[in-house]
Image 1 (cartoon, rainbow, N blue to C red):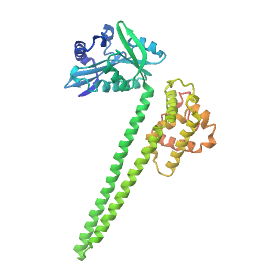
Image 2 (image 1 turned 45 degrees about the vertical axis):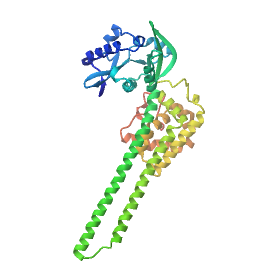
Image 3 (image 1 turned 30 degrees about the vertical axis):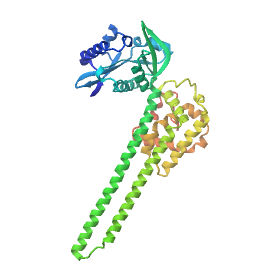
Image 4 (image 1 turned 90 degrees about the vertical axis):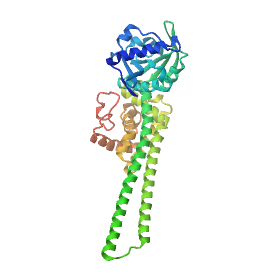
Length: 386
C-alpha cells in the first residue's frame, strides 16, 4: 500500500471511489451530496487537496483538506474564529473492504502536516452525530467536539476543531522524546560495539604475540595469564557499556523532566505562539500563566543547571541543541520575558547569559540562525545579548 497526494490523473479513480461510497453508505444522512462547484475544484490546490491510499494502484481511500471558506464559513462563524486562518478536513472516503484499518486516521495525519506547513491556525471538521466511526477517527487525530451543530439543509452535523500550532508543538515534543530514546539506544550500541571491536583487535594482536613468542623463543605462555588478560578486557567492556547506559538514561531523564513540567510547557507554548503570530489560548500576557513567577524562575534554573553540566562535560552542546535548542532561544529572546525577568534580574542569571553566548556561537557555526539573527522582522523578539 502506498499513500500520496492525488492529482488530475487520479480523477477517474476518485470519482469511482465516490460512487462506491454513495452506493454503500451506512446511513444516507452521513453523506452530504457534492456540489458542482466543489467537484470542479477537487484538483485546484488553492481550494482542495486530497491525500489517498492505493492498493495495487487502485485508490482505496481518500481524505481532503479544503482551504476555501465557502466550504467551512458557517462552522467557522459558529466557533467564533473568523479572524483566524482556517481550513476544513472532509470527504473522508474508505472503500468498504478496507474499513476499520485506521486509514482515515493515517491520511488525516498527513493533512494536519499540510495545514501546519500552510500556517493554518485551526482545522474544522464536521460529522453526523451518529457517525461514530468518523467521531472516533477525528478524536483520535486530536480534534475536539464542540457543542455546536451546523444544519446544512437537512443534514445535521457536530463541529470539531483542531488547534494546529498547539497540537503540532506538543506532538513534536512527544516525537522528540521517542526519537531521543531511539537515538540513545542506537548510540549506546554503536559505542559498545566500537569498544568490542577494539577488544577483539587487542585479543588478535595478543594471540599473534603469543604465537610469535612460542615460535621464536619456544617460550610457553602461562594460560592463567592469558585468561587474566581476557578477563580484564571483559571487565573494562562491561564498565564502558554500563557508563553508556547510565549516560543515556541520565540524558533521557533530563529530557523528560522538562516535557513533564506543565508550567514549562505553558511558558514555551505562549512564547512560541507569540513568535509565529498566533494567540495562545486567551492569554493577554505571560502573567496569565498560573504562578508565572515560579515558572520563570524554574525555567531558568533548569537551564542554569544545564549550563553547569555542559561546563563539566556531562552533556555535549550538539545534544543539548537537539533536545532544547528551540525551547531555550524562543523563550530567552522573547522581549516580554526579558523585560519581566531576565534583564531586570540580570545579576541573578549570570549562567543564562553565559549559556546564551556559547550556544549562540555553536548555532551560528552550524548555520542554525533561526531565533537568533533572524529576529529583526519580529518586534516581539530580540537577541538576549543585544
